[in-house]
Image (cartoon, rainbow, N blue to C red; front, side, top):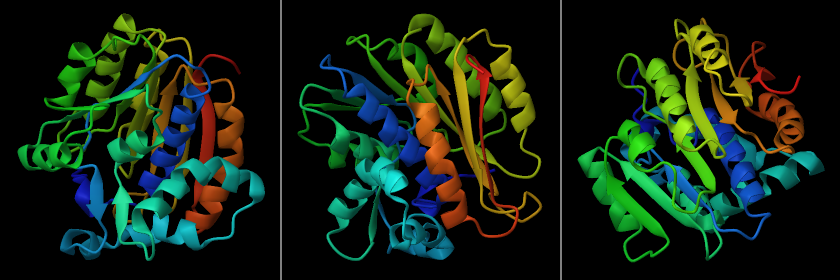
Length: 281
């Protein structure tokens, strides 16, 4: 599948990914020691929802557009606040802009924390570099994100989060994700890892999970959100894999996922799943 992000910014899959990402950064901030977030496939960092590309699909309307208009239970609203507050901050009015993962992370960091944003596409890299020009806490590098799992891991802080969110433009991305994770984990076993993946008809998700289960990595949590039936055209759902999840994350996602499925679901097939591939039962 082709998941060039400009066409999908702010959709339901972004909501899931960014809600989890914000919870992970929030957890890292609970301790005083500095940390680094490494975003291996960073994109452009900020998306114009009024652009021709975004308007062509309009996917954000069923994602962030629907979420910010929906009443939320108090516990879910509190967990989503770090993420939704940033969306509100960059808009200051009607929803016309959406933060990509690197901008979301950067706006959540403390002064002592750092971001490494990796992007290979030349035009996207230029836009990303311009977005963070002069920012001493952010390093933007033009590099294949898969290589970054070796070249940038472990971070010198020896504490942090690695986000792997490839565009799934090429065959074999699920396999490369497992291989890249295993290689990076050997170098940085204490790090947090967050891997995003699409769910649609024919996607090798079951095999992806089997490979992760057999990887030897000891603590793996999976959260999935489907908004429509897999038989429907396009993206039916997505998932995030979290390696070394914070002890609070499973409970937080147990609160968030039913709310997201209810608010963002498009038909009776809307569903959510939360399970471990390794670690505590």
